[in-house]
Length: 109
Picture 1 (cartoon, helix red, strand yellow):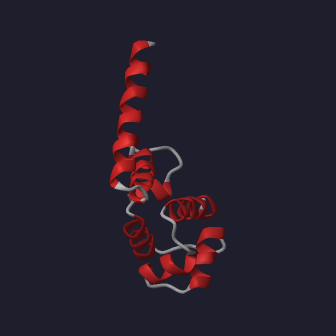
Picture 2: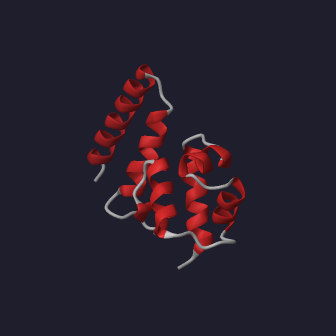
């Protein structure tokens, strides 16, 4: 198991959610230095901590464990993280852009 890569994925999802290490550590119930060591791969995280981190980041544990998307989970989490930072109007605009992009992609298949 590559703890450095797991830590990097934790960091990526944390930043996508706009959270500091301190905020995530508080939500998970661990110290800030422990969170830092998890993100840098300098410590092995326990299964309960992994589950708590995934819950706090609103992602699946597979998204933290595996680099490849598992049934679209990583992509879904990234899109959700983007949507979470949008106003209602921005969500509507974003949805229309995605729909138009999908229509164009289907046209050129």
